Image 1 (cartoon, one colour):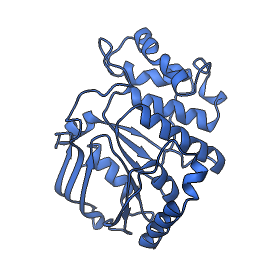
Image 2 (cartoon, rainbow, N blue to C red):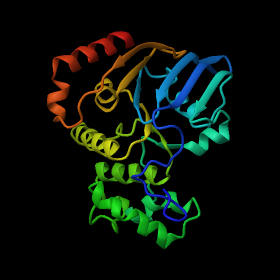
Image 3 (cartoon, rainbow, N blue to C red):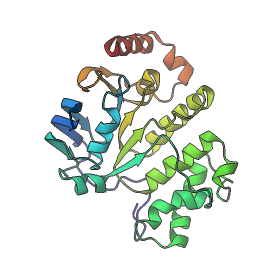
Length: 266
């Protein structure tokens, strides 16, 4: 976000071509000692597209996010994130939202969201002023001065997502963002996140154990095998975001794709 020192979370930050590749992995392998987490991963994600990754536990999905984010280096293969191929360059282009919101209990919701700007060197008042308008936009109006302990799980995740956006990175890595929520709140947050991602275009890589969530939130779903993780299936799933969630997940097309994904996982 560049408003003087930073821009605005709702505007593309100008990195990369408008219709180019956001993330590219070619022949990526990663092992931890004798345990091979990922083997031969080839994946292309268009800029400002949304890709979901599903698969069995221990299949290397979280390792994939860490590799893309530059927190790990591949043993073999190449990773490119908007032109950056080294770890520091990838890290500079990615923002990660973990399963746990990790909000600081002593800071208000507004100050938690604004900390991403403060970490970029923006003065606290300017960071708060830049972040405040997005609270109404993301359904957080009148919760600016509330502490995390007073927020519901869904509201905490909204603050966490806004904090991720305020980091002004064109690539968002979502690691089971709603895994800790109950099923009703999770469904509500899925609908909310769809609208939020439509408003704020980013390249999104989502890791989840929930096949339905992946199909709903993504334009393409990649199915990983059990360890070592390999791509065993890709599914196109660009459903209209304006349609009510219940109508999408009960449609024959959605049900068929879900069955294909589950079959590939099994």
